[in-house]
Length: 117
Image (cartoon, one colour):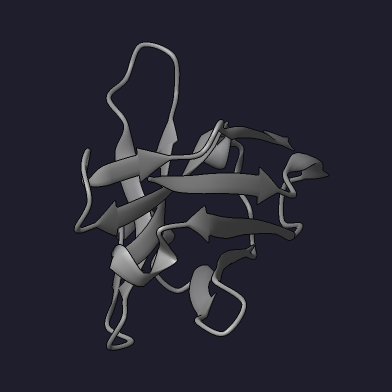
């Protein structure tokens, strides 16, 4: 089992920045990738960014050039630096981990990001 605890989030004005962090514990040796997803009520959850153990990163089209994901394997954390925030970035952001132990996908409790126009 893997446990994920998020921190960060909150309210920010459009154009501002926020940083989200997520700490993993438990069967951390089994993790192959960590990332962030977000969900807006009435819409499907979408990928924001992910990074695998080899350092390969993937970004959702809507955040490319504005958000940066980083992992600290020594501290078992993943962070998301969000710059140039837009009102449409308002969502509940979830930390995610892909692991080789059931149930293979793990999720944090979610942290709210609200961008005011």
